[in-house]
Image 1: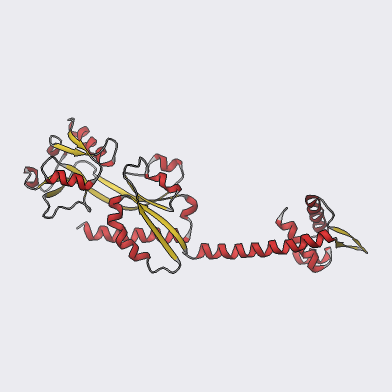
Image 2 (image 1 turned 135 degrees about the vertical axis):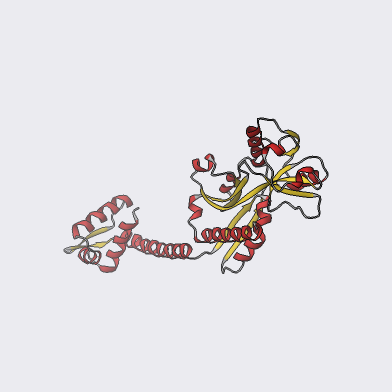
Amino acid sequence: MDVRRLELLRELSDRGSVTAVAEALHLTPSAVSQQLKTLEREAGIPLTERAGRGIALTTAGHALAETAKDVAVALEKAEAAWSEFVEQPRGEVSVTFFPTGGEMLLPGFLRRVSGVPGLRVVCTDQDPLLPDFADLAMDHDIVVADAPGVLPSWRERHLVTVELMREPLDIVLPDGHPLAAKSELTPADVVGESWIGNPEGFPFDRILQRVEAITGQEAHRIQRLIDNSIVEALVASGHGIAILPRFTTRDRENGLVTRPLVGVRSERVIWAIMRPDRAVRPSVRLVVEALRAEARQFFDAHAG
């Protein structure tokens, strides 16, 4: 049944005549009568009966009018709840991070959102083996992922993407390596080294592929690993060199030296990814802004 027609029946119950209903709702009496007849057909039983020059509600009509009042109350409650929902950043927001993204942003981000009344942020981290972190948008409000740009699969799903930060990727060398004497390194400097690489197709491996394309030489990958801490340990032990993110690679008194790679684009972009319906929620918008603010502060503190 149409809610608007139920409202007409409720008004008829309260006001007593079609004319009074028409005047109150700025309709013509014939329009009100027509809508009531349609409602009666939908109900399948008579809702009104002749009473003198006008009409009155039947027993069924009175019962349905009472139901219409309940519907009106429920709608008002729903509208009030929705208004509060869209105006206030309340409720639970789930955020999932790739590991080094969580390492960089999570401590400060949680401080930023901890004092928001009525807001609960639930954070998790995810296995970097996932082929597309955007798959997690089905189960989380916000996915923090890294990629060189907006991927075609994200566009196909109409996902909302917000850029949080661009992090440079550096060449990581064992302490004492001859190339550590240089302040920056070119593809020609590094292509001939032994490499602790990533699995094929992963972001850092794509950068090494660019080095190969620029130099016309094939890099010697002696291992392909995912976990950055394992890569760091192998590099520090002198097994090879690697490409790793600047802000989360430890190069102080641990056997590592980092140098920027020039002549090839070497950075990763950190994104907040959301489904469109979740992106409009005030609580999600607030959390994204907190992520952006924390990313800006983190970058400013570590980029110098």
